[in-house]
Image (cartoon, rainbow, N blue to C red; front, side, top):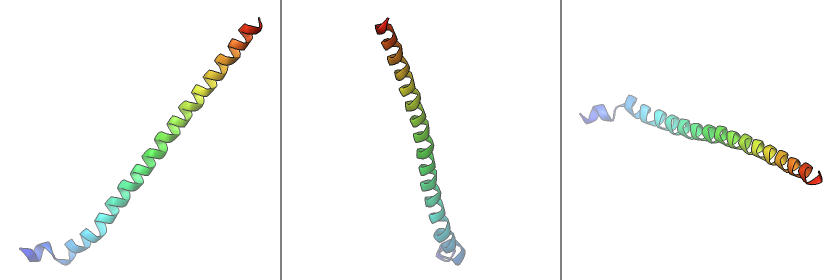
Length: 64
């Protein structure tokens, strides 16, 4: 039974697949963070533009 657990192909699988899975999960996490950060940055830009428009309208009303 132990000879099947520790044979060469299983040993290679452990050595090769484990780093691939870990690197894939790390890269996936980095890509997810990059995509969500871009979305938040775009939302912040839209909010800033909206606030600028509101300030401009308030200044026009005050000048009238």
